[in-house]
Length: 469
Image 1 (cartoon, helix red, strand yellow):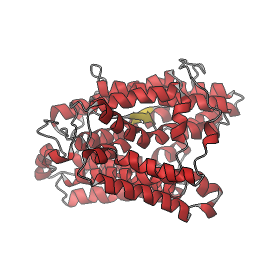
Image 2 (cartoon, rainbow, N blue to C red; image 1 turned 90 degrees about the vertical axis):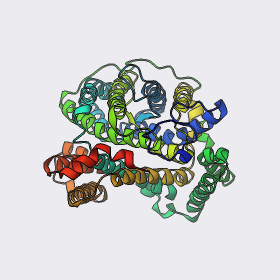
Image 3 (tube, rainbow, N blue to C red; image 1 turned 90 degrees about the horizontal axis):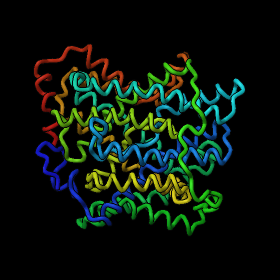
């Protein structure tokens, strides 16, 4: 078990701590649950970008495979930790949604100028590669930003991350975004709600079991139950994976190396913004893993994790994939299963690489019906938001804190609920501030800097995280 004296999870909540070595089968089971939580998140950005750019099935399949392959390599680097690179905790890497809109914009601009789809992809990856050092540089200043990225700020960012993901989960419960956009009359049908409900109830019952095997396997078992029922109902479309290839070889710079200079500044800004998101994700990972979220160890891990994000995003660009970031949904899996061992992370990394090299394997995951997936992710995403609230609660919430929370959450969720409010903004501003995480996180940082802090609050922030029980 974890022997951390400053950990934030109760000892009874952690079955296997960071440095524990669970048996191979238990580690595999826990890794599988993480994969089920992140698989769709990893392949969705390349799916959306490929569709927007009109890529043929071969190109689309290739960038999906590379997204999985790179996520596996990046996860290994992040968890193993090479010198200053990596967090050393169970922080899983995956394709970032933050860069989705800009990537499509770059690709469309290249095609509009007469470029080929291959040149469009090469330009997206080229701009990402030359901008990835922004995050690497920023990671070196994290030890000096502790007064800016306080528990209150981190908690707000983590809460917004969870609340933003909930929309994805509830949409899947109804049947998915495609169904909502194209056949809204079938969205949230009794059949979809039944499937999601079966998965959700199964996970709740199993998670509350005193049997650690059932608890650790709650998400996998719940999804398998839903998957089986969906198969009998004819909702699992196995035909979609019949055309997938057997093996995909990673080829560095397969689409060349091109730069669209007008898009460099917007890409750099997005790398700066995703740094804030990663700090929140890494803080939540430390907390749910029972590891310190204050002091030198914590700061070193955050700095290494953000540096790892930058290095991994550069690696992603080289191997024809989109920028990577630390995923937040895995924090929900850690908290629900009680497994925070880095050995599980090595299993995750290895399986992601296999999925990338053998796309037919990953294809089985990609056809999980949306309601089945939504029944599991809704509870995990809610857990992330709850973890953020727990971090906020560790700080003294005086009038100043209440004001920062109110404005940050109000503006962050506001632009998410009514994106039309940004209608008169320039395109790049819409891309930056259209995210609840970006708007709320930057607002929290700005207000935390300009609003005077009481001496009592300054003292409390030094040890706030260690008081969470």
